[in-house]
Length: 459
Image (cartoon, rainbow, N blue to C red):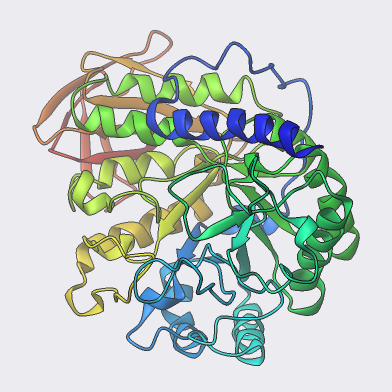
């Protein structure tokens, strides 16, 4: 791919990425996006289904901001029910054009080493070994689209990097002033990045990658590169930061469900009916390969904290939703106890461990436990149940060969008198809410839901 062709390619993909973040079409797959449900996609490793993904920013996770301090917290993560840790980039950060006092972890100066701020390669290996000893998994952020402006190979191999029309090292996203794009039109770039991808799996022991702006890297790079990774470790997990069904066909198990996140915010703001969320889940499922596992979230490092957007109590119904539909639920470190401060990518900050909301933490632990105990919650089977309060209440049945669970979720801060529209049978009597073991009285398909209450009952 020549420099001009790459520029056109990146302009298109960057435009899509920005539009995806700002205004991805709600309740309507882009007509240009092919229906790929007839394809299987890649079967995720079994361990991906065993618990949520936990995004962790080493710098922000403790006052020290080191691998050693993360290792000390593994017992907490294990007890919470976390199965897989996602470490944000661990590599040395560039100095040229550095943002803030410490620089952005997505500005990578050396793909084959660690940020000395966090610790050494041996200390990272110790953390990875400790994670595996806890029967957990750990993946790392791979920034394959760009590097820092002073990347270690720039002098030796300047041909690896994208240039503007004046011949200067450059990038396609103007605001990303601390980085230079890689040029995948050059074979040497592809060979270099193949070595990078293999290194962290084969030599360091990570269990997979979260790939930053994956759609800005050509698909014809990902396909053979990931195939080679699976020859090293058939059970790696691949997550793409992109919302595209095509990525599931060539390399990835999961992509972001940005659309659901935007939709949930609009539901919270009373701009969309709650019922639209379930319609979107089904519409997306019908266009993606059968084994695709969208990553569902109510916050991540690019977004404001859920406790600020939805509220500490108000986030509960939305968390209950993403933990009771198919896909991979994400928790961004601190979300589980109500952290309100979004960490800076450029300066030092620290999670507010001293002001944990234990009631919220307990709620997340329960969601994680129920998802493990009742695999029906994570299944692709979803029966939408109509109700008399579609603006504020979600109602649906999740089932598998062993369980059938009725989920009723009140997204509002007001009590809702709910009546379900079920023609096949009637629900009556006293039931147990699986979320808190409280009694639930249902009379002829009608039930009272408290503000922000979620009710899961076994039928």
